[in-house]
Length: 338
Image (cartoon, rainbow, N blue to C red; front, top):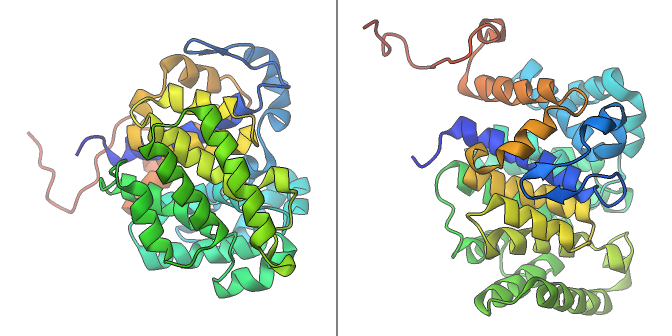
């Protein structure tokens, strides 16, 4: 095993958080400076402005999974109501890349069971996906939802040590099926650009052109309910491009995602999750890790990752883990005294 599963859990959630912060830096004073996030400390009291509603909803989802040990949509909404009830206004308001950010804890928690993972992602999407797609999402046939499945499939491969950057997109395309949906077409375009070693500007230009063709080809009733220059398919495609063009370098992956300026907060968050789960928390620059701890209650969120992992392992009394820095979990009588 290249990295421990816990370090990959941490990498996915912290990577997404770092991407959110940097993607929001254009108008919150956060800037890239080598391996540091500058001016984070001065924004401690503005956490809600730094982080998107989708990240905060995901945190509530993490707490619900920890409390229930399973996906309980009513408890998730209860957690949101207790923490910040205004977030409930975002029900049926997300496009697919935002749903991918929101459902990241679900992807981690059910990554080893493909059928259950897809089922729970569909259930969550029925709450957060935009109203116009709700009936279709419930049947599992939403075109826009394929982006969430693509992200989930990639993260599940990384968590099970099966992600090969060279073959990832062909594997995703095989998983999604042969239908030429908008998401499939965008991912196919990304694969071609990667094979050509296309640069970031060229990739962004080509994906925008492909996006324009997608909108012109789709029947009016199937157009995603979002502006053409704010397409969720392109955001997800860019996240895969930024990750796969430099898969071993977390800093460069996220930096390039931010510099696309294309829905930068969500695009960078998804790129950070992909690169973080693949490279683990170990390869996230230490300066960025330390900086995120100074934002609001993110120290608590770090602990949530460990508790989520513990519940996934089957720990049934989390109070025991709160007083121990390092724990091992095994079957009875496997761990013996030395």
